[in-house]
Image (cartoon, rainbow, N blue to C red):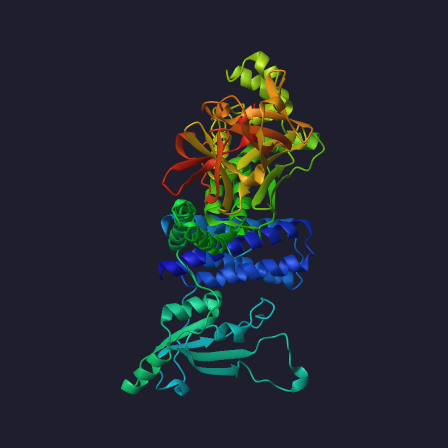
Amino acid sequence: MNDELMAQFLVEGRELVAAAARDLAVLARAPSDEAALDGCFRAVHTLKGSTGLFDLAPMGLLLHAAEDVLAAIRAGRPAGPADFAALLAAVDEVDRWLDAIEGDGALPAGAAEAARIAVARLGGAEGVPAQAAPEPQAWRAPPEFAGLAGIAIRYVPRADAYFSGDDPVAIIAAVPALTALRILPREGWGPLESYDPFACNLVIEAVSAAGRPAVQAALRLVADQVQLAELLPAGPGAAATGAAATGPAARRTLRVDAARVDRLAGLVDDLVVAKSALAELAAEAERLAGGHGLGQSLRARQAQLDRLVSDLHATVGQVRLVPLAPLFGRFPRLARDIARALGKSVSVETEGGEVEVDKAVVDALFDPLLHVLRNAVDHGVEAPPERRKAGKAETGTIRLAARPDGDRVVIEVTDDGAGIDPARIRDLAVERGLLRRDAADALGDAAAADLVFTPGFSTAAAVSEVSGRGVGMDVVRAAALALGGRVEVAGTSGRGTMVRFVLPVATLLTKVMIVACGPDRYGLALEGVVETARVTPDRIREVRAGRAFLLRDRPVPLVALGALVGAPEPAPGAQRVVVARAGGELVGLAVDAVLDRMDAVVRPMTGLLAGAPGVMGTTLLADGAVLMILDPTELLP
């Protein structure tokens, strides 16, 4: 089987496992929830059909047993907590196998034995064989298909196909390059009054001129209900007929390798830098004798190009967006595994999986979110006896939620565990030599909680396989910074903890003002700039240890931007001031000159400068120089 089909199986498999786990969590609380039961059955049934394309006999065996249990419950058999626990354990086992397939290309060595144990727990026979049932006897195409070339198909839908969400006619219609089709009753229709509209009584036979891999891919969800046979052409004419029918039907989607999209995005970013050079060319043209008209024409063309490049950049950014659901779906099973190793019980609730984020952000989020989840289970959720004593349910709850916030996405991991004790964190910081006692006592509760992101800091009482080595939350903050975002923590002792990520949805074009401080150039995001002003010395007042100036009779603090970044302060006299908003308040930033404004692709700082305070990121100027984009809120003392 080709690698592309396996990759698609892994993606769909994780989504189906996550869907089944969500529905089982609902059923554990409300066993009579028919929608959850039907959804879980469909997910397990669909995943079982997909395994038929590969040599995954233990997985198919386990899913078949789970499907039988769900079918019996749907038929009216009473179900209890033990049934749903066994089903959840089976789904978790399949999830672990998907991890193994992704990493090693095959099921782990003990998969057959694990399948037998899981099937027995589901109530299957003790002597379940390690291999799947033997293949049915080969099907031979009917005489009506004589003279055709390609792949003959016999599709016998299950009688309860409609209840599984299958549409047999739509499924067969999705097979590419069909050249023949027959739809027959599986059994005689009988008298009209005995017709059951809810039972599928069809046999569908067809011929496709596409190759076997394409046919198998189209029928992967019902592979256990399909038989294929190869039709050899009867002669040159038949071969030509088959070749003429290979054109695929029109499709509304296109699978593109992610590396090609990344390359396209990189080229668009370079185009943003290149088009900025037109402004300099226009200015040079205007300075020439008689060049004013040429300069104006160049500026008009630049304005048109600006709009087109901005639209192109936004469109490519939309192509890169993917939903968070597949990422979120990986964590419930991992949390249960971690909790089991610690003798605890947790459930993970997810919300906002439909929120779309740039693929690079999603790919980079797995490790930091896993760190946070591990800490929530280990340090947050208490052991069952402690939770009972505190009046809590024995099973802890961890909630993973996402919501859009303008051009950012907010992801929150919340638990109902022991929470954060600022006094204990201060004591640990002193004990580990991170702070002096007086410095620790001077910290507010929010600043004390922020110490958990300090390298080497850990609240674990002992080292375990899960945590306690002082590695984790500092990595989480570094990952958030590398993505151009931030992370913060909050909590109340005894009432739980929340870790919040605020990250960019995608790489956006930022309007930047370029200013000069001495010989150096810096950028300020225009969204934070209120206005620019020229301030004469008579409007500047000394205020305590600083300075202020009057802006329309309102005092505004005045700070030399050069002093904040290590550049020379402006010369005495009238000051060129950029009035910006920092932390909700106005502040005047004295600069030597306001040079220009531009659209820029701001890249987060990396390497040794990844955590540099006061720097949003960098961009390239038209002359190839690197421009640092400053964040006044972080720069100001």
